[in-house]
Amino acid sequence: MKKSQPWAGILSPPIALGGIGAAIIINRSWWRLTDNAISDLGKVGLPYSGVMNVPLFISAVLAIYYAVGLFREVKNPLSKLGIGVFIIGLAFLAGIAVFPEGTEPHYHVSWGFFLAGSVGYLIAGAGLWLEGLRKFGAFTALLFTAEVLLARWAFETFTGVAIAEFIGIFAMTIWHYALLWEKFFAEKG
Picture 1 (tube, rainbow, N blue to C red):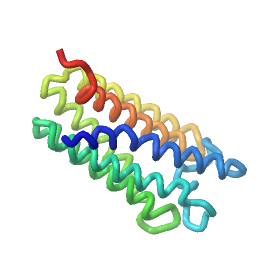
Picture 2 (cartoon, one colour; picture 1 turned 90 degrees about the vertical axis):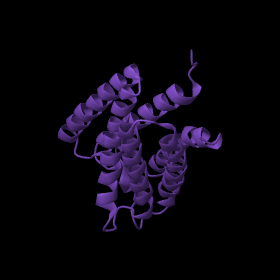
Picture 3 (tube, rainbow, N blue to C red; picture 1 turned 60 degrees about the horizontal axis):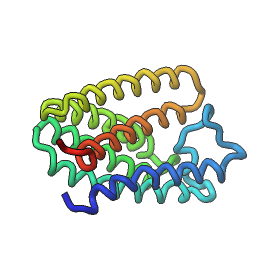
Picture 4 (tube, one colour; picture 1 turned 45 degrees about the vertical axis):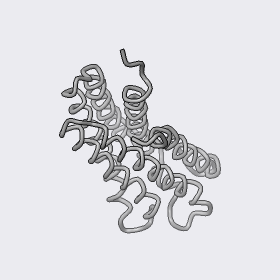
């Protein structure tokens, strides 16, 4: 893996979350966490929709660059499959920026991001468990289970989907940083 690829992985989530946060601040007069979707902040025709969409696209490109390096690092075919599915999820993240709410493909790319990203990290975690990272594999299974249960609760509790979306985003981000730490920064002993 190139030295720049882990750094791209480190920078990717704060760029996306920073864009979302800035868009929330700009649109705070009408946007509500419990009543809206995150995509409402980047919809077609909304002034300053690029405040969210541009960082999402940049974040996706950086994350794909990192994940391609990670794909080359993992050895188990199941890990490779999981990272490959995760990369597809990241391509869907770029699609959210390219096809914002109000365009025909938006619904599909949005669901594609959450489904492929989450299933991808679950498969990769299983593969890493087989590679000997037993604790990380167990952590992955617990994180995925918590994500699914909490997102289901949020879907049933709130009129908007933003909380469920943030649950998915934070689960993927936590997994991503935990894997970065495990593979590249933890002391090997």
